Image 1 (cartoon, rainbow, N blue to C red):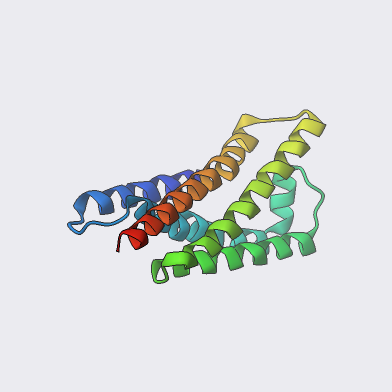
Image 2: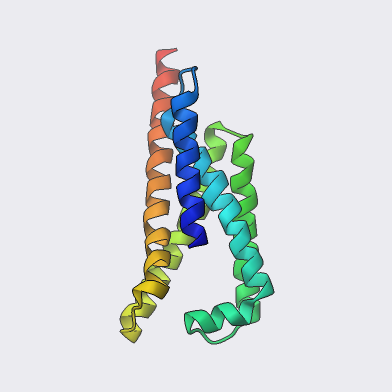
Length: 161
């Protein structure tokens, strides 16, 4: 539920930003930066802290065997993703591709692994698996689409100048 609130707040913030600003610019860039900072940054930093402080509880909740070293490694990957994504608030241009690709590959990979696990076990609980699976699939695809749109617009602007 927390991830949903962060995602909705992030999209709402980007929408307010786009509606209230007076200067012309890329709407795709605004939404991309908000999603990178809000969802790939802040939300994943919180996820990393949970994995570091409660590895056993997370494993039990997901039905996985407890493996604190693997979850600690995953948590540090999330921290790297979060820090590089939060820097998007200040660094723009081609820098945005780094956290976009890193975060999207990590989350899409999680979606693939989780989907494979659900298919093999035959146990899918919408309440436990559904939102996470959707977030790990839909958000990265949206972020990749925004990055593609933004980069395409930047190329067009450079060609016109």
